[in-house]
Length: 114
Image (cartoon, rainbow, N blue to C red; front, side):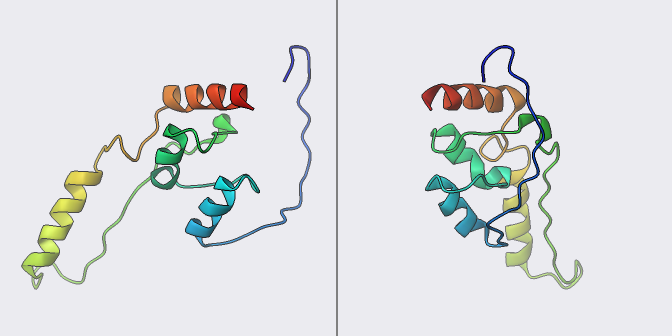
């Protein structure tokens, strides 16, 4: 975009819709679509330069993982171990979270490479 150009809103009818995030990722990586992907899915591809973040003003602030299990009282040890491991590895993990500065830098570098 050049200095002095204006941005116009334009309704676009989607030509692609899926609930299969892996398929959506592969399609975005092929350059065919603009995708809305979860940060844990997109982060490694953005960092590697395979995806360019767009619409940075509309990025969700929060992303949560939830673990559901039947009972705390009758919980097998392997379930407790998995819960502990998941919490340890996922809580505030930089592998799955992209900060605003990192997103802005990736956006700028990606646009320049086009």
